[in-house]
Amino acid sequence: MQIHNSLTRQKEPFEPLNPEHVTIYVCGPTVYSYAHIGNARPAVVFDVLARLLRVLYKRVTFVRNITDIDDKINAAAAEAGVEIGVITSQYEQAYLDDLAALGVRPADRTPRVTEHVDDIIGAVRDLIRSGHAYEAEGHVLFDVSSYPEYGRLSGRDRREMIAGARVEIAPYKRDPADFVLWKPSTDEQPGWNSPWGRGRPGWHIECSAMASCHLGETIDIHAGGMDLQFPHHENEIAQSVCWHGGKEYARYWMHNGLLNLDGQKMAKSVGNVVRIRDVLAQVPGEVARYVLLSAHYRQPLDWTDDVLAQARSTLDRVYRALASLSDIEATDFEPTVEFMDALEDDLNTPRALAEVAELVRAANKAESDKDKGAIKGQLLACGELLGLFQTDPAAWFGAGEDGEADEIDALVAERQAARARKDYGEADRIRDQLTERGIVIEDSADGVRWRRTG
RNA sequence: GGCUGGGUGGCAGAGUGGUGAUGCAGCGGAUUGCAAAUCCGUGUACGUCGGUUCGAUUCCGGCCCUAGCCUCCA
Image 1 (cartoon, rainbow, N blue to C red):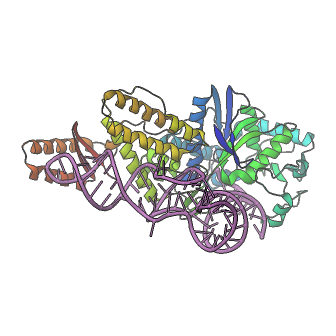
Image 2 (cartoon, rainbow, N blue to C red):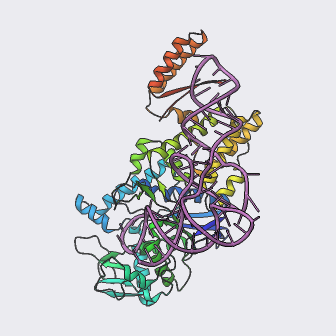
């Protein structure tokens, strides 16, 4: 398959270091509040990547971490007057629940920073010993000048960065670009004992430690949001490469584009976030997932009610086709060649979805049970790779307030009786009544179907 | 200011040096008791100004607009 590698800024053939075993690390969230739909994009996109790689390769180990040590967590815990673990366990669970609702499969491993403090301390100690880090006023800093390739991933020159830096430069830094590996904690702050006193890890080191601990010194794919490219991933590379004696850290870097709301990136710092659970209250998770896959993962994506409505309409169409095939047994459970080509071309999900649309049309046109069975199998197989179309069609259309379905069924039956005796006035009256409740009736050769609109 | 991206039909969104993306919406037809659904058909689409070319939306350059990064951020 082809992957756009942020490191080289071009599409490259993907060749895992070990052809039998692909390793992927995705930067997970810092758990101090509910995740927003922008946080869901990498989770969904790289879930599709993992599904695809699991088909293409014998073995895949996919790691998505949980960052449960962070100053924002400390602040949230202090405000609530609880231990940080109370905050982190609550929001970690909420995050995992949200992802499950979006059809994201669990990662093979979900490591937490608190479980890796010893590994982090070891990494920092090694970096000091090898001359890549230094102690200053209780902090341990990474010496950026010790890594000449610094800036390669984000394509920036260190001197220029300093010129444009808007951040205040801490006095204990030898070089303004140096970043913190370990920092001291006050008695009130959470801390861990270390050779440099009681403290806590800096922001970047935890990913380096967890990645190497779970996947080895060199990993195949490292992925995350575009906004992590600098400084987070740049710093990860610097510290990992130096830590491992010059060994390459990640061979392919993938960065997803950001979600926009009103033309501006959705971010907690901007204050324009739509939480995943708010979306789930509005539409089924599958609709949100479809939206996230409807644009190529590297492009920005505007989050609007309109795209949600369009996604729902399109999914309705797919599920109508599947509903019409509900009595047909799926035979060729195999994605089409065109579909696979699209996904293997740097995860081109829009093209893959166009192929799905072709299958839907073919399904609606198919006449023989043999053709129908084959198309149904292809459709479901394509859907499985995308994490879509796996819902029972009846449940899809019936989804909503429980208990109402029986009542609607009764009205539909009543209308059918009226139609049978050609009492179209009564039949239409019942239909109008249902229309007002947002129910659409579809008469077809093999019975009546109803569904909810928006 | 520096570094990355992006500007495609009403909307969303792929792609390509010279015929159709695809979906949603609209319109026409078939079908239907009427609808809905489905099928068929339907759109002077590629920011702007130049250049290269037999031919550019696609390659090159200028300009305009826009997003991201340079600070926490998926």
